[in-house]
Length: 469
Image 1 (spheres, rainbow, N blue to C red):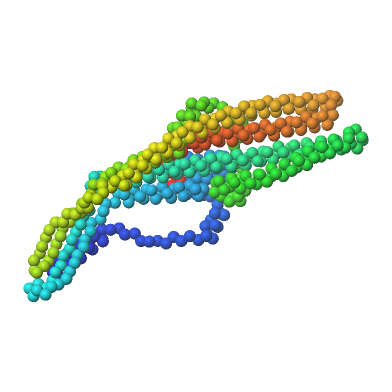
Image 2 (cartoon, rainbow, N blue to C red):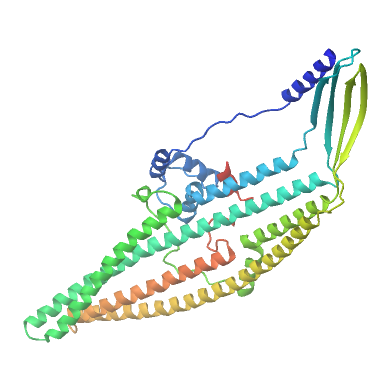
């Protein structure tokens, strides 16, 4: 009896010793500390420099003298909380693979007691149980977890693209707001000059007062438009900071560069090429395909679960001085159900994912066609606005030549300059719309379309892998 107790104790201790137990480590959140850390974020952070280098954007000097769209995108990948959430979900999905690979632990139970027999008053025993999974359930479980992790990685890529698209949109609005403000300021100065010239003519009785009042009202409208533009610059700066994940103060003193901002985007996209790009490259389409693969793996697992598992183990008993040994085989009999319900649910889920994939694919094709049509229309409008601007500049040059030759006056030149300023503002608005249309087209195919931008994103992208490290 003493040897039996020692054997049971040794088995228990050896089992516990073989387990690598982890200890709980508290990690409390402090709202004041996290808020202070958020407020302290800047684009000169040393960790950001290392991240840019890991993302194939090394810098010889730090901080950067100019921040363009690719470098701002990487800064957003480094700071934006949406990506941090997506990375955490990827880590959870990868941890679920570890859970799926785990084998069931054996069970050991024992009992001890006594009886009134004088020969041997002790009764003791133990039963061991080793679970044995059948029908490849463990392999199917691992596959299902791996497919779910693939979905989480595609979710990360989709989140990264949304962040990049938001950075491009807000940077475009910020630079457009600044350029628009400059054009409105130029128009306001010309209208102020016009008002001054006409007031001089009014003073000598050359023109009636209503003509001056009309110009004064136009000047007031220009002042109001300029003030509204100043507010849009401030709002756009706040939106850009939020897209990157830094406070607005973190953008103070930063120089932004967009070499192709003032140029008409290239118009070398064909409908067939854009549609193929949308079908093959859109991240949400590949994510939907991963969703379907996950439903397939889940169905295989549920089909395997209709077959029972076994429990195999030894049975030992000590009674009345005798040692009793036996082998126990246990299983759950599939009498009342064969896992029909979960199998039916998994089949329905697979059909849903197939329909969802077709829906996402059809939406991607339609969205790309619509975005390309808007982009081409914006380019035509931009070309027309550019032609009007060239004509206005030609007229302004003629007015300047007439003034130098003594055949014109300052009022006529001012009117020509005003026409150029108004036309330049209209041309810039067309350029702004063309850049917005290009951004919509990029979102339709979910990859950059301008040279020098970041590479198309995927779960294997060095940018996202560097972020996870």
